[in-house]
Image 1 (spheres, rainbow, N blue to C red):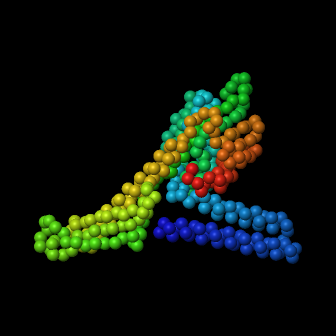
Image 2 (cartoon, rainbow, N blue to C red):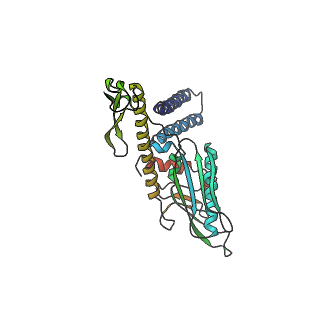
Image 3 (cartoon, helix red, strand yellow):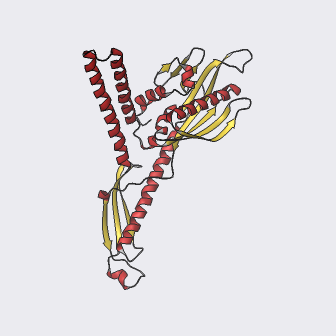
Length: 319
């Protein structure tokens, strides 16, 4: 069912792109007949480009964990009140972005600053692909501004770190490929009466699959002789198989989280991923070189273009 849902999203996305491209062609044909204006053709063209880019962006979110919700932790760096105020500004920015995306948010933990702002906050974000988008925000964010907390009105630099990990749900969907299963039967031994030894009630399940932990083809072998009934023993063996596959999936998720944790950067000069320079009216991402002069819009949660630039450049890699 999971694969069907994923394919359905792609089919729907393709159909939308196909429809908007047909509309663009129609608009161009009408333009040649002077039935529509050049501005209307330009509008149709811009919309078709946007939808193609959205589909391409979805292709950048193809990792298993990208589909999950996210846990966002914001930690103010050194710098006292100024850094703590910067932390609260980033919290507001992400909450506004989540609101625009229709994501559900919950502040799991917050530590207020000494005079203003926050020292740290943990936000749970629930919604499809929340982690896939927000992983682009992992790193150190640098603020440069004339500080309202400095009596001399000096230009100050502050750092705040943003950590993003997948929000792992309790329901791991285990899919067993029937083509990978083969069975052997054998006579059980031990207590259970005459029937135990006369009927081949014992079962041996062989399951061949691709192990995501080792990235190699693997086999699980499970024997079950719990009952005198062969079909029940097969059910029990399949239940044990699901348990083993569940553990493999859990281990994979733990490994992904550990990899993300290992990538956390120290909050210091030179390690920032993005700079927000207020008096120069400039926000620049140092990984993609994407920048904008509309600082207020960014602080109001309009960070989609930064996310898109990151995913289009790095989304398909293992980084």
